Amino acid sequence: MKQIIFLLLPLVVFLLSGCGTLAKKSALIYPSDSKAQVLEIMGPPGDRQFKGRDEAWQYCETDAGISYDDFRIVWFYDDRVTGLTSYKQSEFGVCSAFFKSIRWENAPDHTIEIRER
Image 1 (cartoon, rainbow, N blue to C red):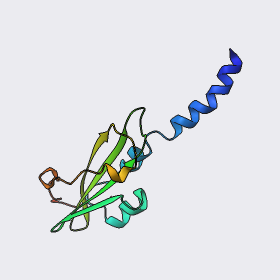
Image 2 (tube, rainbow, N blue to C red):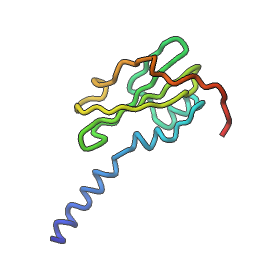
Image 3 (cartoon, rainbow, N blue to C red):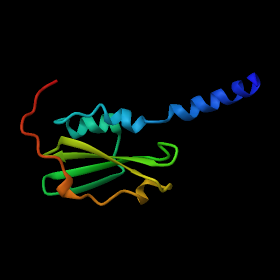
């Protein structure tokens, strides 16, 4: 029995180590961050959509959980973060096939006050 545990333990640790990396990265993004700051934290987006001075960047992590892909949308207005939303997709495959079309009515309100950290 101990031999089985020692054989399976590295596999379990490996599988769990990849969980939540997109969530951990997106937790480092704050309202009023610049696009450059988001690029530094998240890397290039998998999808970008625009509407006037609004912009939305989408990121995806495949097989983020046991049975889903994890998506994050970073919302910008005038090149500054106004918010972040997420959704999950239960179908597996290439992320780019499952990016949603942005619904601009769901965009967070524009930042009214910007404070330095």
